[in-house]
Image (cartoon, rainbow, N blue to C red):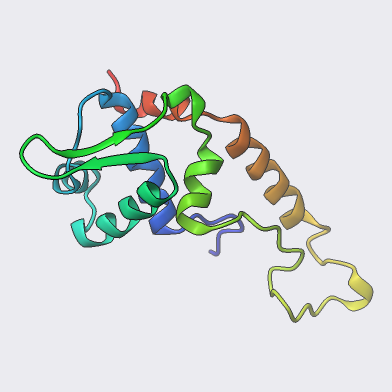
Length: 139
């Protein structure tokens, strides 16, 4: 079965890492500690974390006592910001086949379901804050 809406592994790592950091704020967490908690490759996670730093969502400190920390309160960071820091702009695709649609006369065989799902997902990501997501890591 193919998913209609899919989030890349990198975007998922970014969202989960940011939620974990929000739950542990103001503590700093290292890449190995986050990777262990998420069951992720430290190398892959390190690349994702650097994208989040470049986007101005995270700060990082080297050395003993170092690690990553949020640069803004979790309730001021949308999930869309996190997603787009990792993946780039969440663009709407009118056709699942991309540039070569097969449906005749522009009539989508899915009745535009993919466009509706994209709009719904984008609206959710834009409205949802990191503070909402951090609850997954708090007891």
